[in-house]
Image (cartoon, rainbow, N blue to C red; front, top):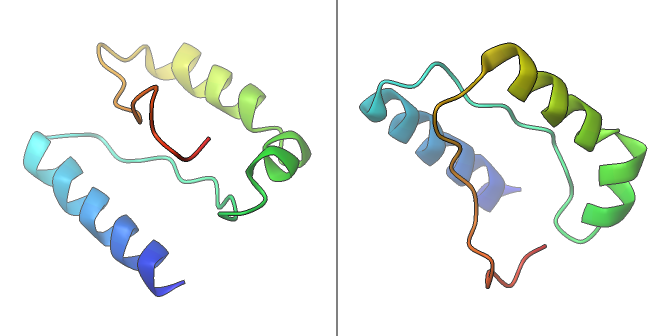
Length: 68
């Protein structure tokens, strides 16, 4: 949990530096991604967010990231 808290803090600082409007966190557990992705209906939430915000850029992990 310490690492997650640190990552959230780092991303909030980066968002501020880049002039972002905020970050969406979905609280997925590290080892239960697929299970929680479905359970928490993350695909639908992201779809709604993209439709409402209409972002110019979306930053995410790389294709060869070891995490799903």
